[in-house]
Length: 168
Figure 1: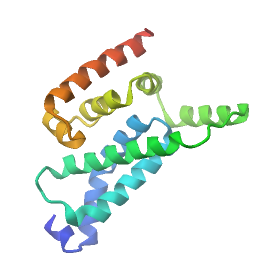
Figure 2 (figure 1 turned 60 degrees about the horizontal axis):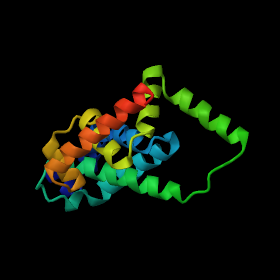
Figure 3 (figure 1 turned 120 degrees about the horizontal axis):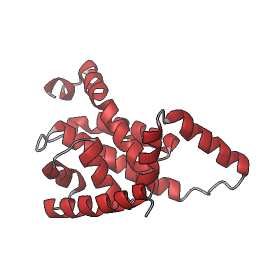
Figure 4 (figure 1 turned 135 degrees about the horizontal axis):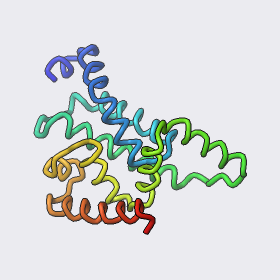
C-alpha cells in the first residue's frame, strides 16, 4: 500500500490483478447480466485505482475493494433499470445465446437463474458470503449494516434461494 500511495503503478497493477477475479465474480453474481456485470467490473476497477490513495486502512484492503465492487454492481443495476427493455425475438435469442456461451456448465446456469429470483438485498449478502467467502463482520462493513442484519439477510436469502432451486 505504501508503494501504491507513492504512485507506484506496478504495485497498483499487481493489486488490481490479485483482486480482479473476486471483483468480477461478485459483480457477475449481483448484476446477473453478463455485459452489464462486465461494465460493473470495469467501473469497480477504475474506482479502486482512482481512490486507492484515499484508502484509510481502517479495514482490510479486500473488504474495502469488495465494498467498491458491490457499489459498482448496485449502481449498474440502477443504471440498467432505467434502460428500455428490448422486445424483439431476435434480441431475446441473442441474449440467451450469450448467456449460454458464457456459462460453461449447467450448474452455473442453474445458480444464475436461482439467484435471479432472490431479492437484491439478500442476493448481495449471499454473494459476499458464499462467492466471495467473506466473514459476517466483513460483510457488515461492506454493506454498512449491523452483523445481525447480515445474518437475517443471509437467512432470508438462503430461504429464497432454496425455493428458487426447488422450483417453489
